[in-house]
Image 1 (cartoon, one colour):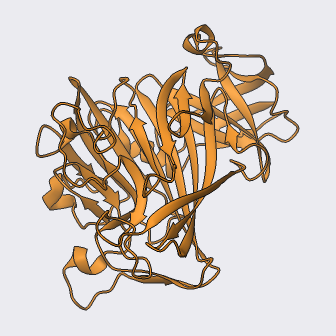
Image 2 (cartoon, one colour):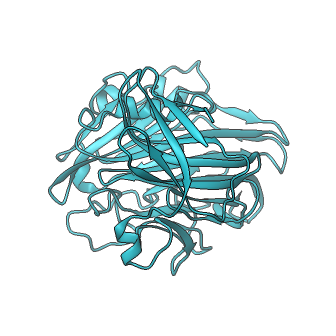
Length: 394
């Protein structure tokens, strides 16, 4: 099989691309060879509910240019993964504290879903420099220089403070819980955990319940992790809420997010960090309560400048989302808090999800080195929402 990848209107860098892989065997090893550089790149055949799909990472592609790739059988693994004895570069497996995602044998993140936690969350989140990019507290309380406010801000998570009147955001009296139910096939069929040379994935199901453990709404998370380059890492996170217990009202409150991040304290904008959104807004004053397609939080971690950008997809509910972003390190996508963000008593951002209906939001978390401009976050956003066109040519 041969494929032509067309960059289109944007420069592509370390960009995941997917194409129909009908006839390929997910149990086999594949590479795609660039006709230009002759470099063999790892490729992964993935069984999905829509058939077999092939994915690989395009390293660089100039705007309006195209490149031809040839698919071949054979294993192309990173040196690190071979030396560590791992066949897959991205590995998803049960670990001591939850579901672990490893890159080249080293932990990338862990999905914590045990009943002792009031919500599920991803921690640690190790960036491309090998250092954690989200705050450790309250999971770890002895990291020098970390702030110890808001213990419910657990790294990367999803929650909301008014779901049929139940507080699933804070940890105050009468708060609710997120109860993990099960893992289901990561791509709709097959294994619940997918590992491979290009990506790893899982799909989890949980129930948001009241203090008395009465179900309020069902949640499904689909997480896909990529390790595209030494200077970048990607997490695609899809969140679906399903009204299985009757209509669900999501109240107008800033205390909630379809995706929430608390960055490492050294990155805080009231310290040495910086906030920037898709419209060029900078800092809390220009970004809090505004709508934007993406938000980037940049700052130092262990002496290196790194950034964590959250990108919203046009398929998401109420795209582009509003943002609750603070100089003290909080960044979360909240599509419900119209009254609180706009400051107008006549506006109501609450939403009633009808019984049996689903609400879906899709995000890309882009972990990068350098600042927003160095990392070309605007172009990386288009890798997510308008990826290169892949043409099968033979």
